[in-house]
Amino acid sequence: MNYKIKSRIWIEVDDRVFLGEGRIQLLKAIDEVGSLSKAAKALQLSYKKAWHLLNSMNTSGKQHITTNSIGGKGGGGTQLTEYGRDLIKIFDQINKNCWSFLDQELEALKKLDEEK
Image (tube, rainbow, N blue to C red; front, top):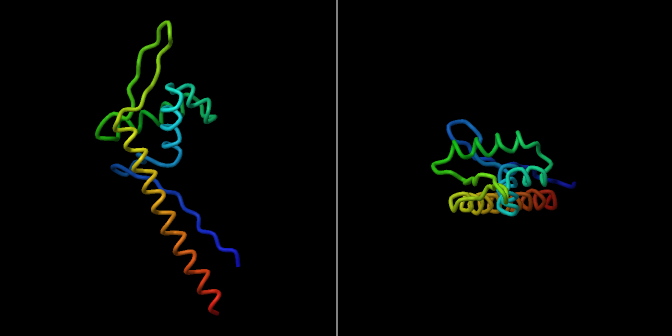
């Protein structure tokens, strides 16, 4: 048998999604390109959807995850705060630990089949 475990992790605040894989990808893209609109384009999201996700995170967290600069000659931008970068690190660590645990449990299931 070829077993697979599938899982998705998300973190909720007051019964609303705060962080999940897609939101973390958006934050990483913002950190890389320095712009919400460019990050949305890179992830093939509409600007409206990306803005909604980012606004939801900024209003659900204890601190702001991003800061914005107003456009002008050089254009505006969006940058992650230190809190935003820390959230990415923590979420990635939780995800890594979860997958390590699930991989161990999958191995236990495979061993059970081998014994029978």
